[in-house]
Image (cartoon, rainbow, N blue to C red; front, side, top):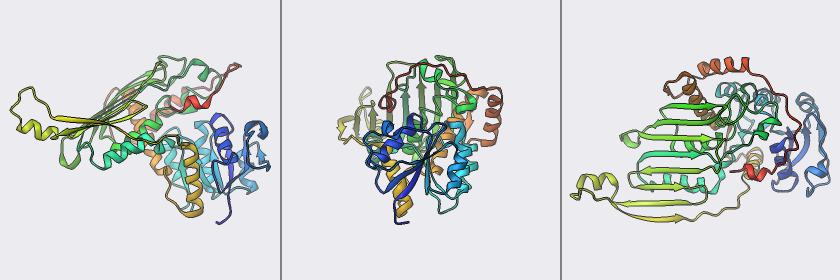
Length: 394
């Protein structure tokens, strides 16, 4: 393929409109939005007032009609979570490339069932945009260079995802098992869980407790506390991990701490700090005669260049993968890991016991199906909610 990628944007809610504006506004090159799909026809001049083209995309009210028209090479699917698996399956069956908004589906089981059917020539990506967040890229580089030595402990407090009641009240699907398949873990913290395993790998096991509807009138989790065990490097002892998450705290915190034998990386949501031990803890502990001594250490703030449009970067990568064969930053197969981790945390909370990974996807799906069977979409309230999407990117 040498011409521009003909894109269809499926779903014109909050995030779908963002993707539309990035492409039509010129933040993504070698791609044209030729079609949109949503129940209501959009006003493109209002949605993208600074669009770089006078072309008006063709609008479809349903996905089947869009696919049948054969006007697209690829789809960006940004619909409610419960529609992801069905729409993804329909798209890849038609040979269309797919960029799926996070998460891939309500569970890893559902996601696997549709991404496995994608032909080899079809690119299937997931919008895990924080993989290009400059701070996390810098942290990953430090870990890969063994800046802190063997990992001993990791903790992440991710309570900056505060959502007021109106967020749920205006939506029929948010905060329900049938609509989302989960809450904080599946919607907001799926980014953190992806970054966690991207940085240090998947844990061996997880033990968790969740608050279901603790802060909001919802069915799903809005508070999470999880204890994890990660495999040690090079035969060393296992590393411990903790994850704390909430959508009901304010002011919230985004605090990531990675402790290694040779130092510590701290991230407070604003800056990355590296502390280096000299010598490493293991050497100092084995050799010192100072009963209350500790290794000498140095501290420096890591220089990180910000100002990245993360969503546009992933959309551009998706286009480049289609046209040039570039490797995807977030292929759909990678998106299964964060779903597995979210599913394991929920499973542990439901069962009241530790869950080993890889998680039993079929067993988890059976437990989720029980909750979906009792779940209902809510009747949305007609509230004049104000929306600033930039405040959602935390």
